[in-house]
Picture 1 (tube, rainbow, N blue to C red):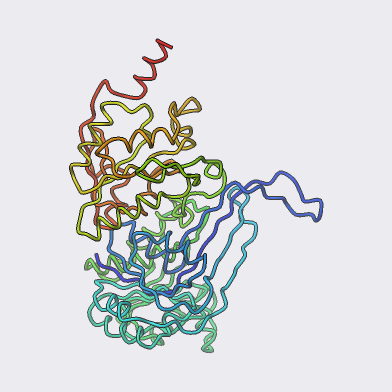
Picture 2 (picture 1 turned 135 degrees about the vertical axis):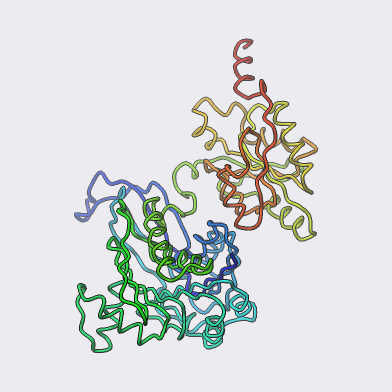
Length: 474
């Protein structure tokens, strides 16, 4: 489905660590940082979740030109980002956790900026959408008069779900659903002079339905589910499945995105709301927004070694958390010329005939072959401390010596998702006896229209077998 998300993007940073002692300067815990993870928040989280579900997603937003915006663009790989001119620093929310226990949150650059500008491309993305999610986080994108006019026109054609914010703009009249949480609904009612208690959420919801002139209002209530208000039916209580939740962050974003999808597929409001509540519960059960963060930037990755950058075998001292710019540029150039980018990945420790056959088969499927290569630290975590047998520099050099390999990109994580998100291959090739759709990378590639292909596994040819044979003669 072609979905446009309109709203404000935030940068969420998770600092996770442990604490075993108090500071000598004050009675506060000393946090030993284990990892730092960054992810897109706000409208960026809605867009990320929908893209990972396989939808074609455009994000209409405002982005700055600072370091935070660079992190956001990387986190939003797979999403078509259409942004107006930068008018303010990137709003950043940094959470510090000890284990799973939140300790403190720091907010930077979160003061409301001037109303962002819009472009023709941004308005065209709204006009061409099959469903729209407005994720208002109070930073002005929904106050832009041209964007509001485009949404007002769109409500006549497609479902529009509006997730409001206390500091944001009033929803455009006629949207399919507005999704305040209970606290927001009560606050909005109180601001208008209507007193309502949490147990009287229905009074607030009915008031907002009339005030906003939307088709429905869905008041979300966390683990208690949601209340659906329509003009011609009684209030519907939608229960939420029982779920163990360690971090509720992102539940509202997941619900709003799912609601737009289900409405776009033709479900009525009650059916779509029930499915969206289930989706939000499942999202939290799987770890919520924190599970979508980029790979950690502190810890194993910080100890990684160098990476081979050039086809000409020049070695440069980049860290293995850096991606090979030559490989990424090659992919962009091939795509720009209308060619097909093919990628494959693995450890490739002790290169053997099975590897060579797989690589040759992969190269025959397109106009270039880029190999995503596990770093030494990554191989150790996956295979054990006795591996790799051959260092990353030598493994990359051997691969680049093969005529069928055009570039090598080193990655330090256990899986190649972040690497693939930068390369965005048209085809991802793996050897093995399983269906392509069962590969864990299948959903990621579907986000930009790519596909997974498997080639036959060659028995009796493996690195483990070679290593065992070498051990006998050493």
